[in-house]
Every structure is written in structure tokens, then in C-alpha cells.
Length: 165
Image 1 (cartoon, rainbow, N blue to C red):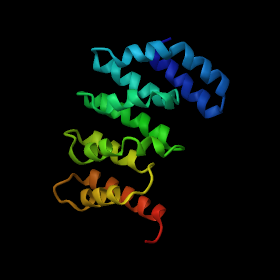
Image 2 (cartoon, rainbow, N blue to C red):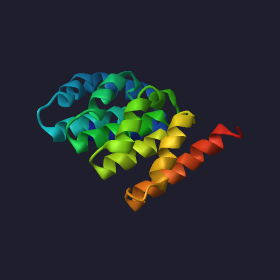
Image 3 (tube, rainbow, N blue to C red):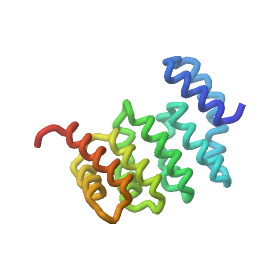
Image 4 (cartoon, helix red, strand yellow):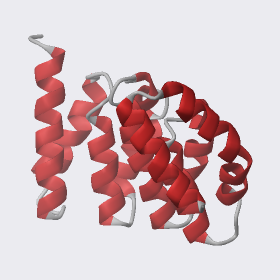
């Protein structure tokens, strides 16, 4: 079984709530995941960053931080997908890397990475600076339409969660 196959199995276990089996699978694949994240091949690193989320490895947030700073857009994107998945029930995951997400959303050269960063910000706490950045992206004529739309939806969702002020 490959890391990617094990990650799919881990995701299925997590969705079923099979915590004991998931913990056992994590223990079996921990070293391989760490090694893949250090690989010279961006495809192996991307698979490792994606696996962090599928394995529900909240203990590996530092690994995801490295993924957010990776030179490869595929690796940054995979780390963002995992971050978004881990933050669905734990907004602290997004809050811990908020400045990096702001930077990726506003300035990453890859449009897909920018959109994924915006989507991940949706799961964090509704902070004013995030809402302002998202509104700025949504209202900028210089941004691509898809990014503007995602930013507008995310800003509106955060504003709604923040309540009246």
C-alpha cells in the first residue's frame, strides 16, 4: 500500500468515526509521511501534505506550515487542503497560521493556491483584518473573477458569524 492509499483509508476511517483503527494506521505510517514531506520530489511532498489532513493529524501542524511555504504550488495547495479539512471542527488550526494565509490569499503567484487560502480562512474565527483583506480581494478589478467570488462569499460568511458590530 502507498502513502496515498493509506491516506484514503485513513479518511474513510475518520469519516466512520473509527478512532482506534485510525490511530493504529497513523502509527504505522507516521515515519513514511515524515519522510515523504522531506522528499526532493514535489509530488511526494504534495502527497504527504495532503495525507496530513486525511489522517486527521492535528499534531502535524508544523509540517503543514512548511508545506504552506514550499516552493511548489502543488505542495502549497495540498497543505491548504489539509489545513481546511483539519480546521472544520477546530478553528484554531487556521488562527495559528492566519498571517501566512493572508499572504497566500493576497500575493501567491498561483491563482489556485490563492483561492484555497481564501477557502481555508472561512474556517477561522471571524477577525476584522481577515474580512477586510477578503473584501479588498472581492472588490478589486485586478483579481480574477473566481478569486473575487470566493473572497466575497468567504467575507460574507465570516461577517455573518461575527454578528452585528
